Length: 124
Image (cartoon, rainbow, N blue to C red; front, side, top):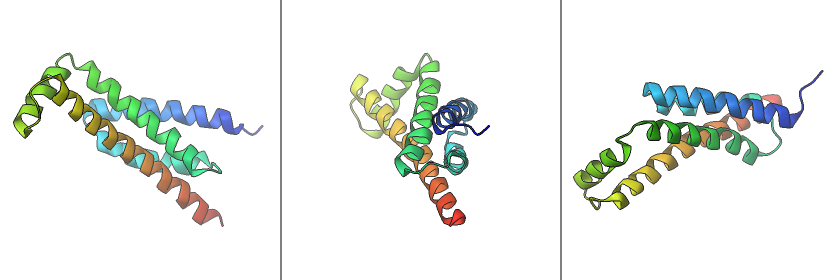
């Protein structure tokens, strides 16, 4: 029996979330782009936005959880912000957090989009 699209989407979303978390925890969070490529290919969606959401959001959440597992994440962000010239306060830390999460979203989501379009090209 074939798996429905919704079931496949959520199954791949959870798989991507767990593996993204493991990669980020191990320090290899840049590899979520390769993971997004595979998930985007396997998803076989009709819409590119589905591939981006399935891969990008789960990679984003995985990196966010790993960041907040560190009890000193906010303090470390404040120190880093002061070093690079941002305000030495919670604002500087939040700016760095947003930049990091946008990079994670872009890496994972763009990997999913590339995988989606590779499948479209190879199947036609």
